[in-house]
Amino acid sequence: MKKTLKFLAAMAVLAGASLPAFGASPWIVENSATKEECSACHVAYAPGFLPERSWQAIMGNLTDHFGEDASLNDDLRLQITNYLTAMGPKEINGLAADLVPLRISELPWFTREHGSRVLNRVAADPNIGTISNCTACHQRAEEGRF
Image 1 (cartoon, rainbow, N blue to C red):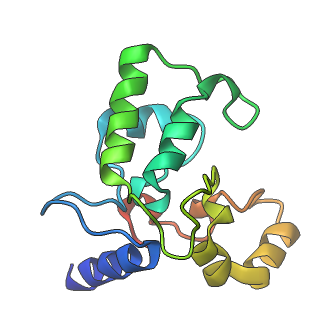
Image 2: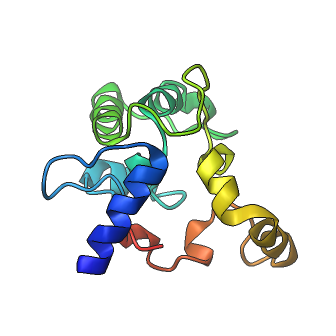
C-alpha cells in the first residue's frame, strides 16, 4: 500500500496535479456511474490523466465520441462530468494552458514514458490493437497500478 501511495503521488507530480482529499484518488475511477458507463466500451480512464478542460470537451460532445455516439441523458452526463472535472487536475506540467488534449496519448508525459518502444509493440501486436488499450500492458490499471 505504501508503494502504491508513493506511485500515485509521483503520478500527480508528473501530471501537474495535487492530490485530492484523503481517501479519494485521481488515478482510480471511484464513481460508479463513470465506471459503468465508460467501461462499457473501453477502460474507464482515471480523471487524473487529463486536465479539467479536456474532460469538459470530451463530455460536451458525446454524440461524436471518437467516432461513436456515446450519448447519455443530461443527469448522467452531468454527474460524470462533475466527477471527472472535480478529480482531474486544473493544469498538467508541460502542457500549454490553451491546449485541450482529447487523448491521454497526446500528453507530454505519456509520450516521454511510452516513446517509440511501446508504439512499436502496439503496432506489432494485433492483440493490443491501440495505444489507448492500457490494460493490454498494465493489467492492474483499473486499480491505479501501472
